[in-house]
Length: 115
Image 1 (cartoon, rainbow, N blue to C red):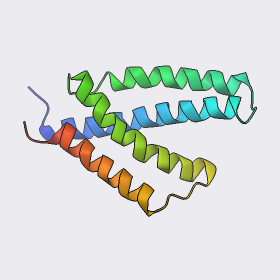
Image 2 (image 1 turned 90 degrees about the horizontal axis):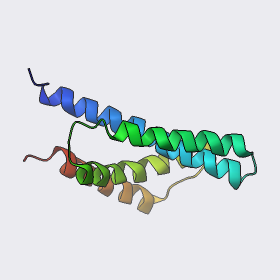
Image 3 (image 1 turned 120 degrees about the horizontal axis):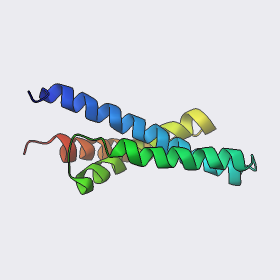
């Protein structure tokens, strides 16, 4: 029995969120380790998180690598702005927010548009 479409979409969205936390968090840890001089343990943890991201992305229900990674690009953009707000006190301006919304609309079209 094939999963229901809403379950498949929910699984896909959760995997995108997990992938974003791992990739953005991993890059942030490397940044902290190198640029903020917090040490190689931070950078090493970042490298491990970045590697884990690749595995999580591979579990997307859609079998098309190009489609999944293209859509993930939009998730990465919006997630990076959110991460910066939470972790570094970054305050996006209206153009940052507008750009992120456009990207997320693109994710919806790429991943969940009718085929």
